Amino acid sequence: MKSNRKILIVDDDMDVILTIKTILKSKGYDVISAVNKEEAIEKLRKEPPDLAILDVMMTTPYEGFELAEQMLSSDEFKDIPFLIQSSIDILTTTDTKSSVQAMAREYRKDPDFKDLRVLLVKRISDGSAGIDYMDEKGKSHWFPVRGFIKKPVDAQKIIAEVEKHLA
Amino acid sequence: MDKLKLLVVDDEPGIITGVERTLRNFSVSYPFMDEDIAYDIFEAETGEKAIEIIEKYSIDIVLLDNKLPGMDGIEVLEYIKNKNYDVAVMMITSYASLDLAVKATNYGAYNFVPKPFTPSELKAAVENITKNLYLRRMTRKMTQEGKEIRFQFLSILSHELKSPINAIEGYLRIMKEKQAGDRIEDYMEMIDRSVERIKGMRNLILDLLDLTRMESGSKRRDIRSLDIAEVARGVADAVEPLAIQHNIKIHLDCDENIFVNADKHEMEIIINNLLSNAVKYNKDNGEVFLAIKEKDDSVLITVEDTGIGMTKEESELLFRDFVRIKNPKTKHITGSGLGLSIAKKMVEMYKGTIKVESEPDVGSTFTVEIPLK
Image (cartoon, rainbow over all chains, first blue to last red):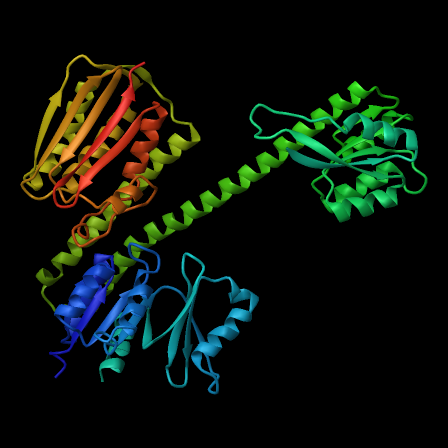
């Protein structure tokens, strides 16, 4: 039943690719991969996946984020869900009234988080999440994400996260 | 012209005007300073007033009389020291005692000038204190910059060490949980990759040792006249096994009797790092050309390959620490990202240059030029 589900892994570390590939294949998924943004876009176009897993730091420090923003703003790829893979800790919030973006703005006011380049924010109750980051030129960005995968890779967690989005 | 703020603290109006007159058109130069330094002069008749001015105008230099109406000069000095202000202080006093001089030195006074003094004595003293302050600030700035570069290096290094550990740990977990089934054959790629990553880590450690020895200057260099062609042949023999695995042919074209005054191990590292890259980043059945030629009192070492090449953007990053060019063509190649930065640093120790020309999918040519004299 899951056998025709295709997942694209974008990561410049072939060991991460091989590890995730092995884990997901054991669950019957089709897995394809790309090592940078350029190759990823080519794969998204030629073999559209059901889900993409994006690493952040590739050839450039925020390449994964750039790819995510490009996917979100393109008619061609905007319906392909993606997860962001990162070793950065995820900030969670239990606030149910404001949007996650507003929560990220609240975090930015806190001196402990004010100067961080990247904030990953997730609301516990409904799982809505997003990323607030400052690019190399000091420009702020915000974009919503489906979810996060924490590095180093843990088989149980990655399977659970993937199944949630492909259910 | 740069200006320093100089404060004269004295209750005798004659001294203040005298100093003002002497330093009004005075400036100090240093051969390596871009600009001469002149002075903006501030005045205070009491210690209390002096502190106020120091805090308000961030004064650089203070000429401080000890005998003042309210608080003494020495107390002002103690205040400056406790606040850790970046101010150079020169004590001027007509009641010099050893006790006071010792105290002033303990509180960090730069020097101790007895009154009365002539204009030229004052100028000489101000020139000295200015140069001392300039060097002190420069040293602090460079130490700070050095710390930042060091921090950057260490954070990249820890990332480079963490990633193979994460990779191998991930593979071991998969094997433990038998994610790919019961047959050992299905794990071979992971085992090979683990071995490869461990090898990479070992090479990183060796490269780091080369780098730290070179940067600390602690490595004993054995400089002697070397037949560079002979060194090149030795390196080519060492790289040969790697070349055979990929069916790559290494061609040597060396002029004989070119002698370079150099450390043999360092020359081997330079040639080895270029030659092993030419093999690693080549295509199977490719070729590598290593040439040693003499040209205009320099030796030219060129290493040309028929490999994957790179774009102009990629080649600009190439000689930096930990830079590895990542694209679909290089994903199976491991390396520390230090080889070329080490080669460049070593070449520069011999006042030489290293350049690269490259074309994607055609190949790259690295040229090292080292002056023979």
